[in-house]
Image (cartoon, rainbow, N blue to C red; front, top):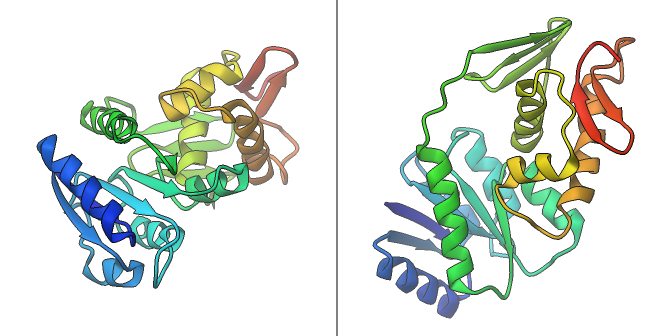
Length: 226
């Protein structure tokens, strides 16, 4: 397994690389975001770890750059900040996970293992989901409403899939959070509210028929029927 690491703290980078090596991973370190993007080749690595505050292009910019050509390789962001805005910025750039510094290496390893297991599980799904005038193309990672494509971030796309696969069943915030991140984080449920609002603005705002619905006290569901 090959891991790409962006971390400008030389000591920390060496410690992480040594830790990954002890677990059987081959780790390639970079210290500058711009240089990493110049050298990056899509799907060359099994997982990517990006520190946000690095020279050149920061981790958020690097993540966005990678996602232009590589939609599937798991990405973990490392950040010294725990504010919800920073977490949302990480997810909106295309990251799958984030870890706040300082962190224990065993926690980083657990996150890596979780993402790699999810990557290896075969996804047996139908290519297209249709709800009223909403079309979701899973393989292509595209969403259309009334024939017009709606641009979603990777996390927004995963959220709409979770709702769509429930086939009208009401899903609690806790259930959605566990499906969206595969584990519990302190702000998960508040973050779900934020993402639901993001989706409503993109999918429902300009349409008379609202598809993303709330059952007060219970959760959210996707349907063209109340």
